[in-house]
Picture (cartoon, rainbow, N blue to C red):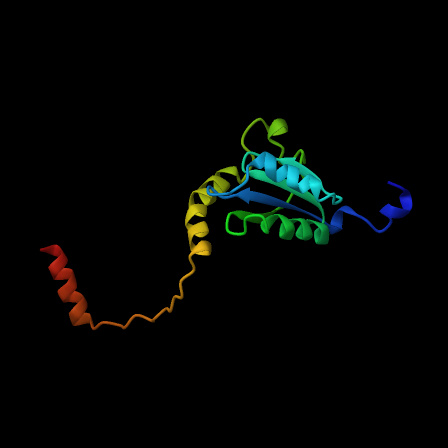
Length: 147
């Protein structure tokens, strides 16, 4: 890359996003990474066990995410990651353990199937504020539960 192409570019205008494939995703992690590379965008791409990390200028990263999500809109999820791929503060190889946040991601992943289903089968929901009950009615309910 020539110096004039790199002017004005700093680490401050770059972001890292995690791309997480849901349990019903129609493509694998390796297919995801291949598709990202085929976009030929100026990104750093790292394959992960849950999908991929992409790092670059925010507008380029968001463009890539938009194009990738078009492949399987209800099964491809993204979230911010505060550090670029390989950052020694978070790199598992340097720390010798699961990175901070991995266990949170595991728990979030367990819910993705429900999110996928909701995205594929949306339903109109109206929330009604529950009515308050009188103290006397509450006491009756408590007594019935104790019996």
